[in-house]
Image 1: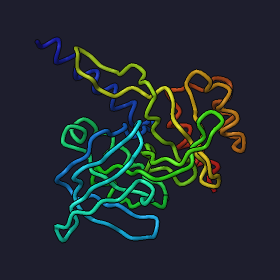
Image 2: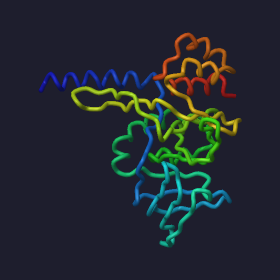
Image 3: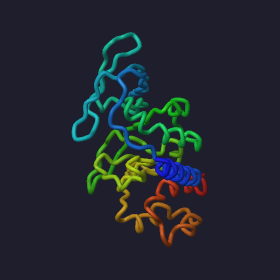
Image 4: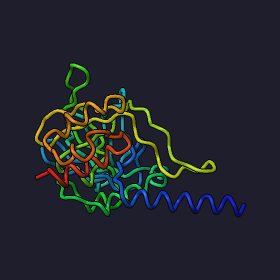
Length: 239
């Protein structure tokens, strides 16, 4: 038992050191709290504050949101009516992902998102155009880099598979990185898929206007450093 505790302590120390020098994406959230306040913003600019009663999806995409508003009135909105949302994870998701939210909150860059809400461990979803193969769809997507998304928006890919997690003695220390994301430059209108299997080629295309970053990582860009690349691009060449 003593040896196990020592191994765990050593592993957590290594993990803490790694976190201090790297950036991370917020893990995807699948379930949301029915008790904590949600913030929904419609296409016409209306802010709706309430608690989620039901969230309907079809093939992973938002179909309808039903809420109990501040006047205890039941309201519902189709996915087409909603522009963006700040939603609270359910108890399970909050427990599993709180460390990631807190870590990101300490690394905040200038963005157009609400830092106060995100600092309370909310996730942010927004409607964006997404290129899927040769077609473009308008979808509601979770932004996984909310604290450094001023220049590049990285979205969770609902169909992505996760790489191996880091753990010891059956205890997960950090979730694995998804094998694909969608990325959109804020001065562009369409998000496109970025994949682990083609990242070597995509790296130079994505960051082509940042020669310092290309010089630093261009010979051997690693998929596990994708979040760090996005962060450093914003720092080096984001203006």
